[in-house]
Length: 509
Image (cartoon, rainbow, N blue to C red):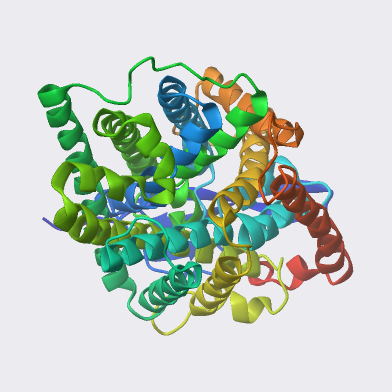
């Protein structure tokens, strides 16, 4: 059967000197790989290489990372009981579905790469480009590299586990060195072997899903054979302090993060209006189900003390208990390391696209270089910068609590801009009534997302019941907030004084 190209109109946000915003049309082929601007008819450089299944693989691959294999012990320590730990994981799934639904409306209404950059520009055009600029810098310098660094470090932890047979007492710098190598490998693949990288991501996503299915199956089998171990008096010791739940939720949401991955690279998704909602929500629901069942399996096989003492290698301890030393300490940790490597690959893919789009908008210096496309059909310079920032986050945090700190500092700006994007969605329902909305988010989904964002941004500054860690409780949110404020100063320099957007790639279209 001959393939027929179906023209589809997409809307792009144009800011006019800070006085107003308008939406211009862009037409592209729903099945082809070229995007055509109505005025210039110039093809875009990045090809539409992602279909429904490869898009869903990116969503699932981005979500399933170090979180499910490493954070359960940290979450249990924060909330104090097995039962409440399970409640927090279920709550995280519900909130993530609500946020995903809101982003489905945003992505199908404004199907352009960049995610919040596009949505904030449309909803908040004054001061000119302030919120999208601050989002881009916060994402590029805090949110994305800190999360990638955390995943890279955990990859190093599991590779060391496989090499030594020990879940703890590894050399901190050996783990970080492996993390650096992982970041470099992902950059090399995405920079020079684009299609091979996408295929590898899909393969590693299958490995992740099979690992979680194996965890669930083992837990179910052990539960039938000898009963549960960790669910006795499940809610004993539950914390009542709000800050404990913020700490736990940051880690749960870190584990669930990734359902917006396609919003940042939608220019490379074929038929995005149809495929974005299916891939994003489908991938999230599959992962959420596996996450909740996997946590239940951990507590069936291991008692509460074993989960607490496992630190960031809880999945390895789980398989050691279930299968013995060879499989539990050598084979499975290697597979988990490969799974978290796949997460870094997906995250590096998304992060580089945000940087690429920010450069083309004129938000960054040297925008022509940072927004360039290599002959390998990849944003190579943007990838190198994303990799460099990730390596900085891998090597600079103090030892001991680095993993938890990276999660907390990256989670703060993420939820701030999630909330602002959904507030912007509600504003655009009034200010841009003419925009086509193929999908409309439920009111309750928008309300839950905004309420969660407020909670996650305010409560981190409340002193916890005990603050005996090496890093003060306020360090992560304060550092993130300080960078956001610094970004406002940089916005004034780059946008107001240097007029970067007026000299940008899109200004000449």
